[in-house]
Image 1 (spheres, helix red, strand yellow):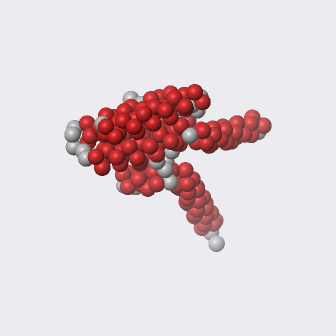
Image 2 (image 1 turned 45 degrees about the horizontal axis):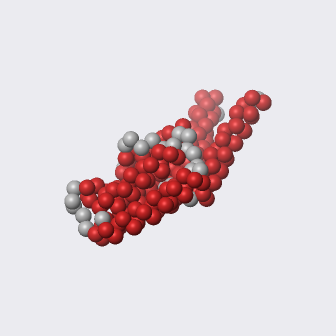
Image 3 (image 1 turned 90 degrees about the vertical axis):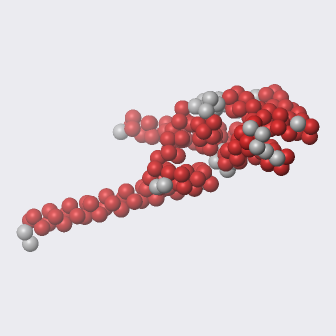
Length: 203
């Protein structure tokens, strides 16, 4: 068999192996993002229109989140915010619209103290989705209902739903267990990064 035929066969084998390896890496990346973001992965996929664009968006969120210094709440701050939330809930009985607006402001205050940028709502939701993917959609729904309330396009039932949506994120933001899980995730990731750096130094 001519030598050029063997060359073509070798090139073809390399291409096939590379394609298989690429597909394996893509599946691994998809599985990791699906596990990390849960329902937020499906939402990003629906908005992006392609898996590649959706995963690029989620990876960008993850990278941005790593640059943020998210802090756990001190015990005194946690108690203060919990008491403030109870006051907001009590206010709902007499003034539902004001209660929803105050709940929105309270969540922003908690996020700011923890280190999340709060200037833009969409970015705020994207940032918090990395640590709280199971409830970030509740936050979006609550915010939409709060906006409707600000323009007078609301009902007592929609305001009640807004409070319920906000409560789910509020609980996660002030819950000590959520802080520990976030800290463990950062520690694990930092540990892997440090390990990889040490391996490169050894080599």
